[in-house]
Image (cartoon, rainbow, N blue to C red; front, side, top):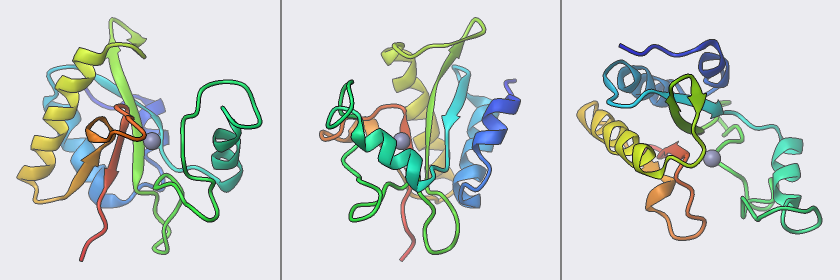
Length: 141
Ligand SMILES: [Zn+2]
């Protein structure tokens, strides 16, 4: 039964307790182990990512500039981050390109959240940006 690594636990700090609850439940029964590589983002980290593919080299990874358009990784008014990025963890390695396994994990996390009556969104269901490592808690109400 997988449990969260120190790295995963650290990246869950400051994430909304409802999303943490889903992930804590999901890790225990997941068919494929996974690791949380990013949780809460500071404004400067978001701006750094936004620069990528625009004023800095690399592919575009986000459409949120951090101010006019905020990422759900940035803290909301309640003080919590609403998004995490995670990857399959297979044979002791973070697998950045294991699309099939990530899909299996996503289905498992969605099912776990549904069972807890907690609404989440998977970035793998989006077209722009298509963002399979990304999972976020939907605002209530
Ligand atoms: Zn993300």
